[in-house]
Image (cartoon, rainbow over all chains, first blue to last red; front, side, top):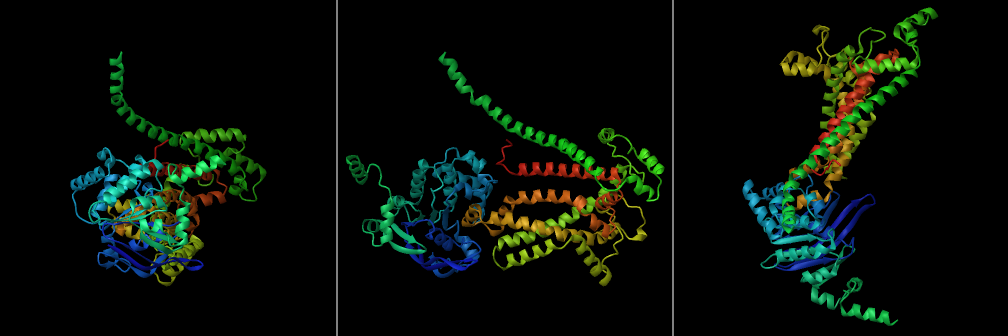
Length: 274
Length: 360
């Protein structure tokens, strides 16, 4: 579905160009969820922004390809790229309150995303929006449509963002740390929701996160990134049980064991014995 | 017993619904009232400060009127006529007493009521300032938005250079250069002799440009506009740099928000994205219009002088040089009242534009 190869992006700074990602390559097969993990600053966000053409004005892809549906997104014209964004690739942002427009009613924002790609009457837009909001389990969607983003809770706002991302039934969904800005209590619901939206059929997911537990649970493939490079990738089961790269091992070791896991129990008994 | 409690629970949403609407409306009213009440208080402070400051202006009005060779008796007589021999407190009380009745006093020199003179000069300045601000806002926004959109690339650098250039030129200097080039060298612009050509006669209606525009008097409008072009452009160009800077900053911030990124990621047209970013950053620009309007009411004085525009700034400057106390006070109070009103109106506009504001 999405094949990234040799992707290299530079940022222009006062001290000269800085390479943010260097020779990134991975694949998102059809119907598969791929997780991109790495610490802050490892280039996860820059990678997806390079793919979607969302780099700031001082950033530039200087090499590589991002092939999607038979065309290279890196060299695609603005028009082609706009057609792909939101229409063929859905994007779930990190912070829903940052992503939603604070001064527009939610209904208007649905209309904007719909009309960016096709002509549709106001009543048809409303119907589609209601259907999408229902499928992401938003209670009383009519009221949500009439209201503004700041009237919603974090979880509800992120559901609205997911509904917007799913509006055109995109075959690929890219989620950029979709739960980082949310309360711990709703993080799981949101991830389950995204997984449910993607599951079944040929839809693929590219999930960017720094949470290895999330990748283990929701993704089939994992791409481990560090300082702008891919250090290891493969099926989750393989990478997590038999990490080849020292950095992956460090990352795995940094995950706190769940309190009910055998490892945690052993640790507490050992501590108690001491 | 249980019946009653159930009823109470059921009926709660009923009365609560209108109450919520009421609660939302009342804070708005209270907020507006609070802002309106501030205006007379600020005016009182402003007027009092102005009254005191005028006392410190070097020079004696009587001496200025009579000339340096006046005898002490003559000076005393004039001071008595002007009421300047009264104790300070009495003068302060009568200043406010007259002001509250809408009487700004009489000019020491022209013997005209100050209010009458303001009615003569204020419309000229308002036209000049409004047109100059129109030029400044539109040009400044174009420069600023272009710079923000092409952040850190060559259009940004060109626009930043242009802004710094415009900002470092004094408006009256630009006016003189304009006169030299467009009147003296090229002959495109009329001589800097006022608002209309000499053959049009001395009668000038207030709001010459706006009036002739609405009444369809095209000859007068054309003449007035050609006379207004240079002063408007010199003020507009210089002050556009302020708007360019503000717009570059606020628009630059607005364009890098996650909101803009998400809009792009949803495939929204670039035109739409920029429009929303602009709407998000409009508050700073609107606020800046109010600030510059206030400062230009008197700040255009030298440009008005250069073009003999007969505006408020020119009038007030003459008043200061002649120690014409009622004129100075009249100018400060009028300019203050206009600025405060404009601030109030724009504050309310900004608030009304944003659904997030809760008026608390």
